[in-house]
Length: 444
Image (cartoon, helix red, strand yellow):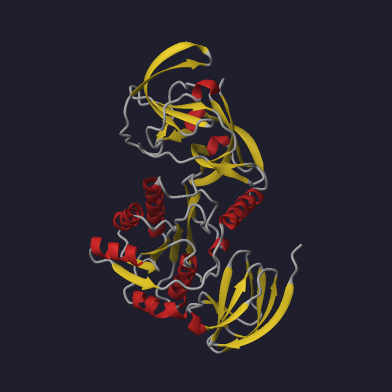
């Protein structure tokens, strides 16, 4: 059981207090700032587990802390902590302002800087409203894992996770690669929506930034959406690449501050916390039947007859030929004979795509352009397009006989209002426990 400690601490502008969650902080006297979010006397905030918040002051502050994690650290501002090192960069940016993207490696402080930037823009009255897009489908603060999200705010914030999403886009996986093109489309849709409702858009990018493909991915997002500003945190190679390949781009380079480094185990725990919170916010789930013609694969609606193959035959499917998310597949034609429900043999000339040996198999019919779902699997996250917004559901099973899916959805949902269903890769049970991720498919 967690042991909570109580602490009263005072410090001045030469120091910064690093508060590790879980912790509750209350200002007794003086003014304090967390990522430029102003804390007045009597004001309190809660820092979640596995998060670190730097508390600063312009003069002198006295705080009361209740914490259950690591001991808080009072450090000198000379040790590259807090937000002081970001002040000049943000000041230079505010001279011209405009939409921006924040890039950096994993745990480099991207979300912290994004929060600071938003608060500075609003506190200085540079803009009236800011849209923040969290483009990390695995560790984002907006929505649930497998989605990317947008929030709109007219007031300073201290934690993006506490702001209600304005819009979500279903991505279905936890990592951008090898589906970065799909992610780019999701980002563009959120940017388009944000620009209709706010003065400036800030994209808090994911941490995949260390390869040539990643560089090209960032470049496409910038060019496709007319982004004028890049904040690069400790990624000099990427910054140099963008400067050399994009005309008139403004790049602001920042050193990496002291950040909370999270292990794979901690990352999974954080994701599960978000899944469980989603289930709780839904007030429980219910199981509904969804007709197969609502399902989208390859960005096309499933139509026509559904072909199912038996589990024993599925083990002998050809090796991976294509990427099931690509719309224009460049894959070789194969001849294959299999048993349909174990009854006889039928010849087919098809494009065959294998998602895994034992889970879902999908087939793209070259002659009719119809899409088929083959095989079965329980416990996969799905995206549900309901009344103009994307929500999460959990695929329970397929009903082969009646060509329908059984999906756990939020209790408030009505089947008549679900216009589209997209299938993802994350395996999840109805308690919010992450059971794994289906292997990614790469082009041969």
